[in-house]
Length: 98
Image (cartoon, rainbow, N blue to C red; front, side, top):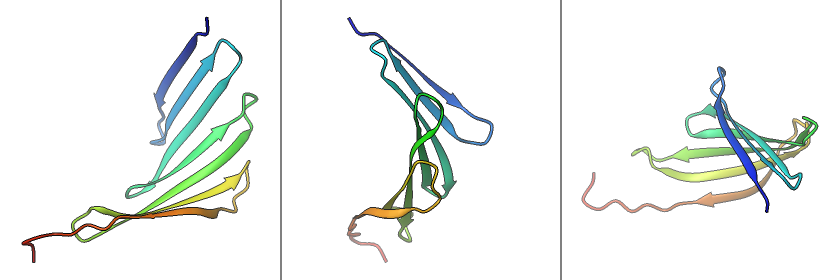
């Protein structure tokens, strides 16, 4: 039987920390920090506390405040050099609006 324990903590800096420890030794820790309107950085950690990876999600909005583009960037371990790995676009058609 495998057991797991999860926790979520809201930090003073506005970030949110997610942790999961599993009885088989698996471990997950991720800290999500808002970077402005709709954008965020997600940092994943190894069990020893070192940074495993960093991801940034930068979102763009139309004049109606609907998300129309998300750019996903990633950096290895504690590097500050982010590289794009994907872009998602959304097309929204408005009817009867000026």
